[in-house]
Picture 1 (cartoon, helix red, strand yellow):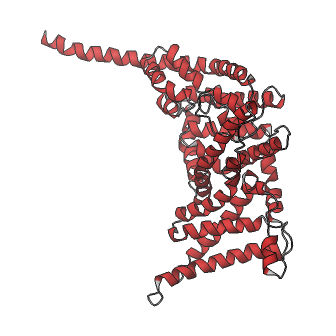
Picture 2 (cartoon, helix red, strand yellow):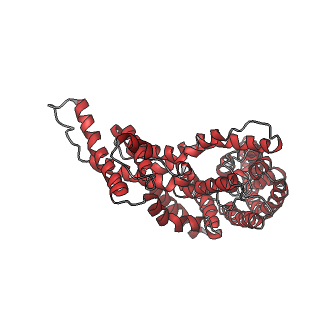
Picture 3 (cartoon, one colour):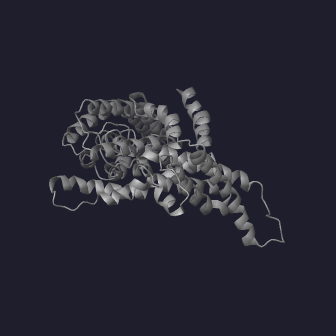
Length: 437
């Protein structure tokens, strides 16, 4: 066990930190974090729509979702190169690269437009994005790839330092030139590819990433995603770093489910942010199903430390926030608690996958980021299924049974240390008394 923990501490954690600090991955991860407010706005409408089902007379507010969460790819197109220029230390190009990325993303979505004609007025009216859903979750991969290309070209050009030491040319002229050149290269690259060579970039990028999406939406992919989130968390690496890779798969899944629901069909994609986080089934109390751990610490532990931590952390745990517990117990780098947390990430995912596949619990059909609402209320709101209460109880029992033997063993160790420390304190107090006598 010591050898395994040493490998986690000395090899895995530093290696993963290095990977996720790569400026290209970090730029995508930062962009994914910044779209959270837009997702939350869509979540508010999704909650509202639950009540619309029971009160049809309420007004339709779906347009709020369409122009917030539904514009997610457009926003990411700006955010990725913006943060990329910061990460690569080219702050002068943040805004220009972001705006350029937005416009070429729209260009990439235009392979199916009507042919351009010589009449300028007719040409302007003929350029239309065939499917507005590509501006939301469906276009996320296209958005990220086009943004990374823009980021690369601006980065390569910025390294040339053109005219930066020239005293003869005014600063504003230098700034114009240093924006115009990379922008022109980018527009020509995307324009020639799309309009002259008639390459459907949407089809090409979707074809390349379809195996990744298919794997992510499979049972093995679901298990791997959940396990990696928890594994990184328990070795001190921010689980959210994984979002640069995983988030596009999750967002594409919920966007597709929303489209199916609007068309009157049943959602089919289980691997979404809503399933993993918002239902608070896989992430009950937080990643790794830590709510039962917190309750066990309150009522079953004998050590003062764990009982105290249980009291401190119970409020955040109820709202599915487990950082205080994970770092305070601690779970991080604690083999006795890391192992059951890993087990929960797999067992919980398996249970949720099969109950949704078998139709015993509704698959989330719309964007929801309401995991900070206590479960199982958030479970019910996300699935719109009263069976959510039953499955929450079932998983609570399963997680409790997994945590119990490991926590009791750890509690014994902590209690023994506390008793030894108390005995040493008594001894130190008694020694001066004996000497004075």
